[in-house]
Image 1 (cartoon, rainbow, N blue to C red):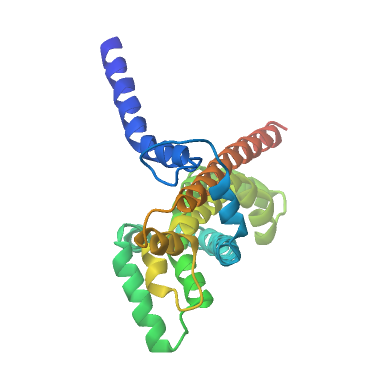
Image 2 (image 1 turned 180 degrees about the vertical axis):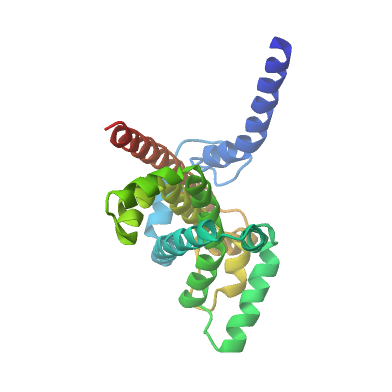
Length: 267
């Protein structure tokens, strides 16, 4: 048994090394004054200054975060409504059908989703740009939120709802004072997952973005095709640090929500 645990730990270490080595390599050379990713000549913050002095890039960063925040907020609302709808479906066959349709959107290749949205927006006359990117990000984020929220609903004991109704609570009170507080960790998980998916999505965004509008993933791709520039390393480093902050923030928020609900349940 001990030998098995050691092999498991070794496997995890190897996987983390494979995953994180390219990222730390990129971060390391973002401080290289030599301008290449081959020989580290000296420490500099020149590439970070270049990022913050690039007005066009700052506008793209703003566009990316506005899209991500709006898409994650709207998809969280729609995802919670969708999870509640699936949860309250009585027929098992219909519930499985809805879950299957939800999961198909997650496992479908991004290229197919992006091309489908491009065709749809072209047919109905939506101009490619902010609106098309926002709608597509909402669409692929909603199923993620549903998958985050639905397990919390299934963990909830029906006796909680029955007790609230016995005490005179109406349907709105049951939803706002019993169900939503219980599934709050799942809602936060869905929001942060949707936020990170929106921030780093490239394939779908590449299809639905138009002239004059871009996001960070598309911009980094277009700049990388023009040649190696350590400003890309600096920008990628900042994005990685922001993602780490999101993960840490989500962890503390979820822990706090669990403790608060646990205290409320004991009372």
